[in-house]
Length: 593
Image (cartoon, rainbow, N blue to C red):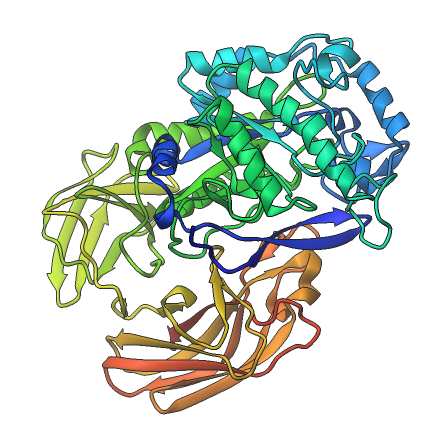
């Protein structure tokens, strides 16, 4: 088994501190054929529904007058609610408005092809009938029924893959579970003491639960494990094999730990930054939290959600979008509105998402994104765009149309390296899809070619790297911690002139100090520019996104003639307090008008 080098992929909160952890990801191209077969439906699906629902939904972000500073489903840990007090919540948990048919119908209306629901989250409460674990919804609540049974049946009727989220390591209730602060090692927050109790927890709690989930609800598409802290590679492998004992076709998510999963998971709400090798998924929220929080009204717009869906598909990445129902079993109205709007768009444009592969173009263009399927190329064009350039496309275009817009007029011209398309249509969609039938599988030059007089984008995925720098799936460098490291690109400029140098980096607002500010130098075409890049250019306002990719202006360079040029970037001084070093996304050269 080939293993990618380690990288940080997510974080969580323990007593107000952000703890980062790492995993290894197995390269998909080295996976056994059986894994590829398991992934077939998942690649076809592309888009799924995540549901976070549990006892925490009753608290809705507040306990005894205190509001959580964390995400709603982490309230037990964040506010250190004693186990005995948290257990009492179950006495009043009665989702009398829960309607499994309505939930499954919403997923279908939204165009989602699989559904992942929290069977057991970190609070340890089972949202299903568990004979092995009396701490469950049937035995401890006045509701007294198994909501998972009805949901599995409703999903099966509609051809939606039923899947379960299961917290295999963090369990704040069961003895031996990681993160159990009443038993944890105080010198190593989040880890149980003694560690041998953790193996007992896996044997006595986790495996019996998994057997129940995999034998009582029909065919299960995948088990979505999460937060593999305290778990060893041997234990992760054992869980994967245990799942496959009962359902060989059931996928195991990458967050089972140590790269033994069937596919990888980007960090929460992270856009894939460029094409990624293998099978990947982005889990994302519709507001800021995952479980229901009555005070969280920071809803993402339809534009934001569609942009992430299209961007994920263009990178060959699945999109798992979350809703957080109330304790009564009601999915918030705003969630329903947004999902149905996306579903309406997919009814017209779904063929450009489902079963497609990543864009054949090495660089994202400002006009939008692209996906492909056999000899079909789909251009996801942003609203208002009337001219599209396709740099380096070698194919002949046989037919062209705008999906759902038969009266649209497309004028296609080829000049040198550029295929140019002019569009005339009456459409208010945030993204319109141009479908091009080609004379073969899309063939595109895999080097950066300037598109007309547009900016030149040099993504880190296309750089030659010197030193121990890594590029991680969200599209930035990791381990750039030395001034000896360099990134080098070769590109073809179409127009001479002055260009402003914008350096794009990655950072997280809540832990901005871990990413820091760095002094860099760029050399190209005999010219040089330098400046400071990093979190100084992030949006630090309260409602700003967590993960961000700020651009830093470091001056102007001059390109005197068209043709092929080389650009080199180095760091002249690194922020020593930034634990992640320089997280470089791209260098962009913008024409100065």
